Image (cartoon, rainbow, N blue to C red; front, side, top):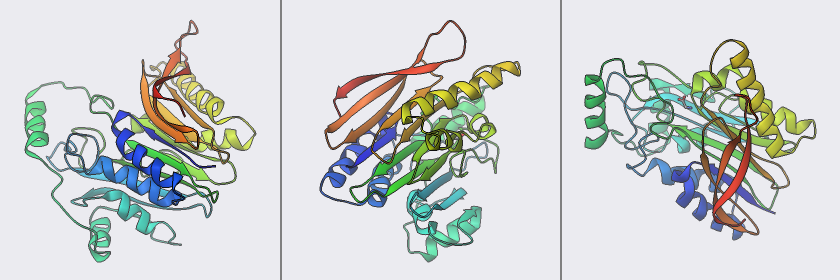
Length: 306
Ligand code: GLY
């Protein structure tokens, strides 16, 4: 059994190729890195890696993480500049007993020492959007306008379960701002015994619920990947509504050690790519309208049929 799931339509091509690698007996570690690198390298995807949208000061500051569910070790970089593939730096840090989460200059120096390629992540198009946005007064941050974090979860035939994330974060974020994506338990979590989960949306919301750990904890109690996603999103949204706030911008994915996938969202539609030994496809999760502003998800295949 092998399986893979990735957030947003932007992950589709990378996940498709990584899925083919898993089908040939490839490792989950390589599948996660390959799928995320494909998104990082594409300048048209403006919320991840090269071509990512800058912070308020005009710098593209990236966050990425990689977690091995067999060892519970993780590596992550945050608020780092000029690392061409932040997921490679995160993977290289995964396995370290200490110093596995590096910020800013430390992360950049680590990437250089590892011989990883460095590049200016700004593009003429991303800088044009930045200049244009600065001209707009009272612009409200929107986690989804630029499609947010790529998260990939993969299970290989040897039972390895891996989670990865990569993002340039919120467009026009304050210098030094870090979201959920490199924070273990919030943006991602992975335990090969119980399952893996990852989140995309407004990091400030996701961190308040330690959302990925919450999903995996529910799986540990015997809840399915799909139900765990729905319950965790619903619980955090409900709590926010209780506090007089809106439900928030949150979408999640999960993968069980037996290859069962899950997804849930507070958005009108949340596309994701998924595949297993029966095939590959692009899907979408939708919030169920249950008469309240608290939502669970239903799923629909957009293309293909895993
Ligand atoms: N979810 C990515 C961020 O808030 O930075």
